[in-house]
Image (cartoon, rainbow, N blue to C red):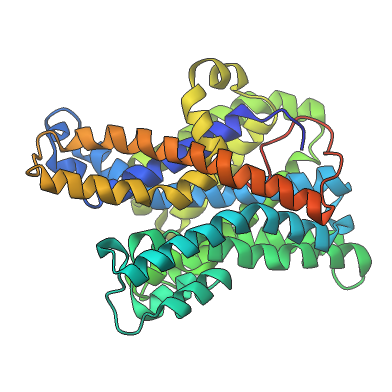
Length: 392
């Protein structure tokens, strides 16, 4: 894609990964037990503690949006997609960090490092590696219980990559065999997937806690919402899009903000429709950002969260290497709960720095080298980019 990036989308992704890091530390150092409870209302501290899962859902919507936008920019329409180029570029971006992470985790597990040992007899190192590489680590956890923290974050990749195994094939069929899956039917498939989120959530009501959090259905619905949003963005008349953009921006901000701050209100009102309200709000906000809404504000005042968005994949895979040592330091220094919130500051700072290092010395060089060696590096799509495509 082009050298420019969309600051609004980077900002939204940055906020999401920050929420994920806070969530993983707050599970172990609950903010409601710290001195912040005397300053901020409980609902805000509880939101910060539990919004990590919502942050992942935002990632899913953004992922579907960027992948589809990139596909249209590169090949002109989904039906003209090159399946091998699409899959190859995904592999060049995703696999280097994933393989290095799995190698490190395997060594630490074999060495018996405390935070990396498996605690359930049904879990094995080969089984976990196989599940992580072949898109069913979420299913593996549902069957065997939670894996250690650094493994656990990989469940979302299983959902994403399963979707993107089917995405290019469906797109290609719509172009090559229109009588079987025409462009209109393709849009209907993604729209039905996106709108099926309430049902996907409802049918998990009696499932285990792990499967409720990590099942394929809700994640695929959220990704499909992003796909539909990108298709709409490329079809809206420019004049209408321009008139609607401010309204879309404020409506999306309100919807996303309300769900992040107090989703309980929406669940009381909409029941299983609440998650769909959230993904629709994300979609509306993405449309506004895509058309330039909030660009000046994001560029001028929110540079650091945008940097988080640029490094979201690297930070997501590596941040638990910071979180767990910080938890041990907190406990080793006497567990002063009044100042427990202070530990969040270095955790965020060090997680960001580690993400920078992973990006600079592993992710970006490996991506560039693999693209060159595979012959997949081609002139980038024209127009302003939404962000490096695989940073999802």
